[in-house]
Image 1 (tube, one colour):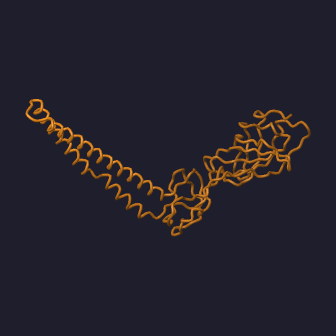
Image 2: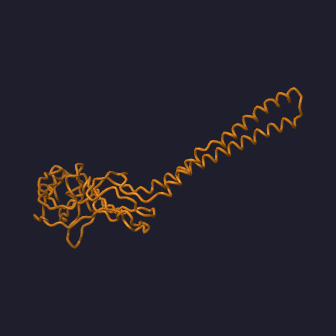
Image 3: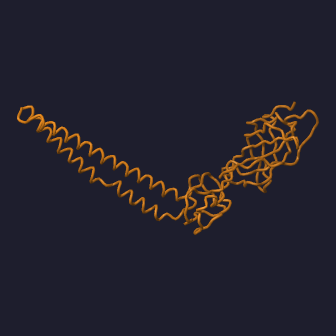
Length: 278
């Protein structure tokens, strides 16, 4: 299951009276969080054979991070592949059809020369149609065996557990030898940290000053980190009556994975991207 972290209530609400202008939207605290956190599980049942990653590893979407024991699925695939490659039945039916076609051609010539009866010609035509039908049945059976091979290959592939996102391994929850028959059991936790979510709570009087597409400067409170640009992607359309605030989410590019999720930050909205408060 995958969930996207929600906004956290941040301190530092600024109140400047009735008229709040764009350049005043600065000096707020914010929280940098993973874009998503995935508790990775599988619908397959069995015993975990190997875990291919460890905590802190960076993984890519589609990368195999663990495998279930799959000896039976491997044998089933080998068997299905052998059957799918069998050509004997098709070749024999094709040879029979070729023979019937040659026979019909000779009998047709004799019939045109009035050397044989119509019954002989009709039998030759029928033999050809039967041979064509038997060849088609053999081809259909071969196609079914190829489909069975593909299904067996898919079943084997499902025993390999892949990361659904680009991210970082946060925690390994199961080790080789443990059962995953209970489908509620997660194998590991993966955090998607590119992009990152930047969550901030603003006072209600700022509602309408920040719009989706606005830009802000975000400074992670982490030694050595410089200010980065982030874009507003969500502005809550409701005001929380208890605190008289609303939430804003920005998206922060983090392709170098330099910024971890779960740290605080300072944020300054750029005046050029904002309208004056009313």
